[in-house]
Image 1 (tube, rainbow, N blue to C red):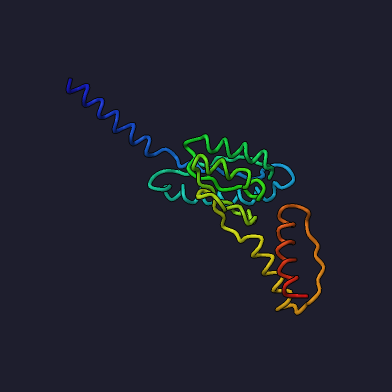
Image 2: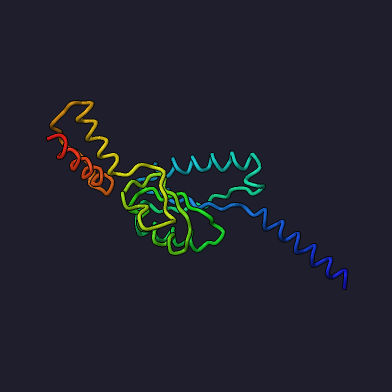
Length: 188
């Protein structure tokens, strides 16, 4: 009976050590194919360098980082699928991404519902982080950029008339609206 108990304790300790050394899995969501793949490749390259450096130095408390990539094409539909895949995988502890605001906004409720933290390196839409304790960003918002540009035009360039050219997408429209609002108050 003592042998069985000792063997059982040994197996439990050994399995605990194996579990403790499982990798830290991080989901990386972005456009890795399609017309915006260049942006996704920049993020991919950055996180791969980071993971390699951490892993070469012994990992985090002995655990290596493992990256799991999800191609969302900067499409809300594909982003929701990637978010569902990541949030359903209990071994993924955090997500870096999504890049496009529309994709981040599509993924946000899924991460919130399943309590998976995510941080976007590129999403500037003002509502990206609103209403969720699980969505973060490390970049400035559209309204900040637009206001800054309008003040720069007035205070540095000393202009009181401007023409606005913008991309007809969420990012371009967000910047245009913020710039226009500030410019109308302070340039005209």
